[in-house]
Image (cartoon, rainbow, N blue to C red; front, side, top):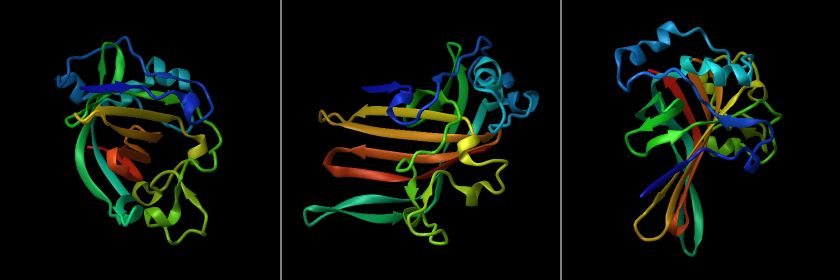
Length: 217
């Protein structure tokens, strides 16, 4: 059985939160949904108010997105301890963002429907990013934390602390009583780009973490 829930904001970052809701709905896979990106106004994650995103701006996010995971690292059990090994960037799943029962959700072939939680802008908290060396950013000073994939995104209109944030959490029972958890935290750049970090944990010390980027298909 798979259980899904929107992330609680208090568990990670400060600021107001909610689940993106909309009164306008279209049938999944309909022509209206497929073309909504072209009809919707541009969306600037640096300036759009949180309230506007929840009331109507989220329409600009509907459609298909290509998921790029990594660079990052994975933990392997060796000699009674966990050794972290690097993971390259890889492109895989196509994720659909759509409205379901009036709420914006991510439709994943692997994980099903995931409600999307939203957070307002806030200062970046130390310890919530990833170590630069763990995500292939040896060009940055030692001790630097990375919060999104600037190399993949290209030029950004503002810093990550000025962007709205979208959060997803999936928990899946493995069938052995253990829970596999995937925690995704994204910064909204615009209607065609989001990026942030992901963390996967599971039984046997399973750990994978890295950068994750969603690009409009």
